[in-house]
Amino acid sequence: MGRVDDIHAAVRLVYQAALHPGEWHAALDSVVNAIGAHKAVLNGVTGDAVGVVASTGIELSSALRLHHEFASRMPDWISAIPAGTPLRQSSAISDADFRRSDLYNEVVRPAGGFYGIVTPLVRTPVRQVYLSCGRELGAADFDNDDVDALNLVVPHLINSLEVGKRLVRADANVKSVFDLLDRASVGVILFDAALCPVFVNRRAEALASSGDGLVLSKRTVAATKHAETLLLQKAMAGSVGLHDIKRNGRESAIQQAAPTRCYLSRDPPRLPLVVRIMPFDLHQRSGAYGDAGESNTTRGALFLTEADRAPNVDADVLVETFRLTRREAQLAVLLANGYCLEEAATKLTIGLGTARGYLKQILGKTFTHRQAELVALILRSSLQAFESADGR
Image (cartoon, rainbow, N blue to C red; front, side, top):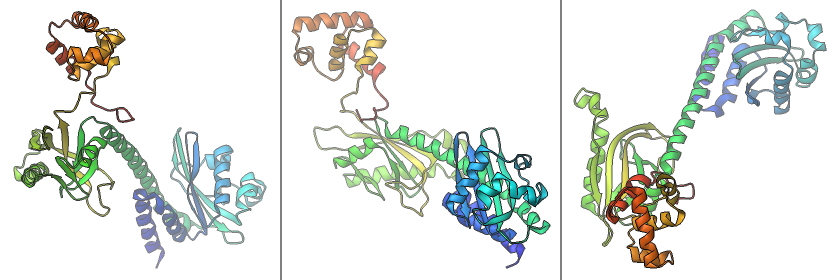
């Protein structure tokens, strides 16, 4: 394989490393091979975080020492190198001066090297990344052809690092979205083009675990009744189809599509689950319900609500919103959860007359006139869209 082929191989592996950071070692190996080096270190500094991204042909202890030198006392001749420019050390510092330098005595000599090329790949106020390539002690210096070969690879190294940084940021954003969905007080299921679930939040898992109404597997979202499964999967398939703009040639049709609704029966006296299906588009890596090697692009979302689930009303919200006392808020929560006044009084271990007095005060503070009107107001104002971290 000639040098041109070596450079092509290095570029290919460098971009693979952007997608799979664990492959940076192989990428550095290919760069070392393309320029005739024996070892290399890719190290970075981001804010206060420092570390070796990857290394090859050099022990980790030596790579860490190099990183410490760069982070704590960067040599002036390296600081002066423009970003994206490979520079032979012998072009910036004489061999005699290099032998007397801290960089040589603390790092290069213990690693058994001498001649090297340093390339600042990223240099911003908050992030710095350097590629250092070296040859063993006694080997000849790098020549112009070696530097030219590295010059061809460096732009791809810089692009790969930028792509990797953006992917990390995107992964963090996606994780935040899924963390938020996982805390939703309604069931949420995201599914792919094959109608397989790729994400199921805690509430949906709880609904499926009862085996009443909703059935989940790695391959299927279904109902306990076959006829309802057919209707549900037909609605899901319709949602996936909305992503195919070839059907009508108008992308706006996807954006304006209304969610579909269906119902999953449960054993009496439980009321059916209400399921809303709508198009969705979010890239998600394989999880508990996704299989590696398949397309995990989310194409639709199911939102499941329970008409008979007790509302999760926060008494603190009532205290702050309506200036209720703690005891008045406790009574209001019980009323909103379906207790009659007598039952609520018993629950609070107070007399019925005291409860009526509290209710009168609550009606006055909320500007309502009847208990039913009060309950409706409470449900509108204090229902929680998201559960707390402990699931309450």
